[in-house]
Image 1 (cartoon, rainbow, N blue to C red):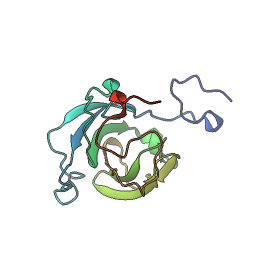
Image 2: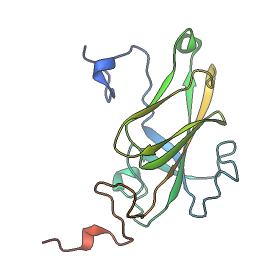
Image 3: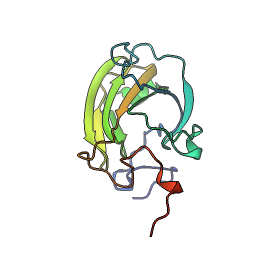
Image 4: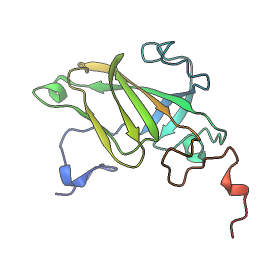
Length: 165
């Protein structure tokens, strides 16, 4: 079955009711790793805007900051109708997030994923309500050589200014 909805993440599992959460999110760097202590998941601070699914280093994200930030936070609101919630499971899918990802829905801790190159999901039907909901995501990454990585760098310098032979 093929989906006629743009950006449908998993065509083999087409569902009539789904929301794409790509787009504009609130975004903040947490270089001192104080966000959990300050409970950003309950009261998100004044923030920049970022275009998801792009990483903050890219131009398409709207931020284009290539400096190293080991902890970043994302936040946005989304609406759910009574019909969307009725007798249905509600699954939040991630197509990838590097490297430690923690998720809160309406201030409730949902769980975490460690890794970068695979999809992961959380069941959230017990945490969402009819009307406005909030999702907050913390992502931590490091320059550790012990951490698996793909094209990402493990040095502070960007590879784009290097000559590769």
